[in-house]
Structures are given as structure tokens and as C-alpha cells.
Image (cartoon, rainbow over all chains, first blue to last red; front, side, top):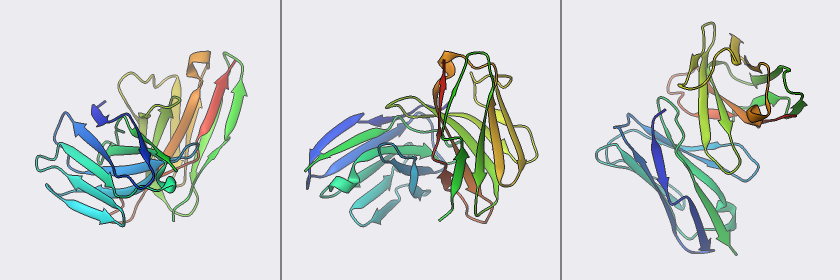
Length: 107
Length: 117
């Protein structure tokens, strides 16, 4: 399947700190989705990005799609313990999951 | 929101037997369902894409004769692991995509933990 890499693989932050995960594809993507999987749970849809350079915000979460549509990022401002989980980018058409970034928030 | 169920949630079987996992969309019709496999602390690996009324499309390296997929209705897809072996032990998770215009997000089931002894 398609290679979609995410960095970092793991991230530990103090509550209140910011967090960013980056997603890189080897090919140009038609669109990209982001999902969150809580420990022991199943992935839950967060957002879809379609346009080159698109930026979308959901409260403390900011999602960005690169100009070349090969990369994307998710930034969380002022993390909370409820943000704990693994964040995956997913290619929108083929639904290949990225490698994921596991976020731990230390209270 | 849309709900997808999976049954069973856990199953233990002996090596050489077959196991069937059901994936149901409870409150919407799903023309497309996806089957994934997830190893501990790893990402989800797409196994196959299942379209209602047609043969599933398997990803490279996934044996279609070992992982039989049937999507007989708009609300049900099944995955049968045939002649299971210990290396098939894993977390299997399905997802469904709705049929309405602009339906692009996947709704995931809670997953099935398969242990082959």
C-alpha cells in the first residue's frame, strides 16, 4: 500500500503545551483525513482536507494541507488530558492509514 | 452519529478452524466497507475494500482465499478467517462509509480481538 509516514511516532507533553504531528506522503493526495484513536478505542473522524494549502480549525486543533498536497499537519494548542490518544492521517480515497503519532499528556 | 457494530468483540479459536466476524452499519446504508488489521501499538493496515454486491478488492499481500469477505447487503459485511493460525491473531476492525452525497468519512466498529491457539 501507499506509504504515509507520520512524525513523531510518540510525543509526551506537559498539559498546556502545544503539540504538532506531521504527515508525509510519497505521492500527491487528492485529499487527506485525520482520525483520533483513544487507548482501547476505535478511530474517530476529525476532519477532511481537500484543497491545496487548506487550513481548518476545530477549537484548539488546527489542520493544514500542504501546497503540493503531499503533506499535512495537525497542531493542538494548549493540550489537555482529553487529547491523549493516537492521531492518524489517512489518504482520503484509498483510506491508507499513516503510521500514527501517539500523544501522552502529563497533567 | 452513525454507528457500526462488530461481532464478536473477542474470539479464541483453535488452529485450523475458521472464524467469522460480522460488521454492521446500524443506522445507515454503507455501499463500501473496509477491513483493517491492527497490531498492538501499530497503525491500521488496510486488508480489503468491500463493496455491496461485488467482489472485495484486496490489498497486496493479503490472501483472498484466507480472508474471505462477503458484503451481501448495504448494512452487513463479513470477514471469515479460514484455517486460522497463531500468526492470524490480531485486532480486526471494520469501517463503513455512507451513501449520501459528500459522504467521505469512515465510521469504525469497535473491533474484534482474535486469538488463535
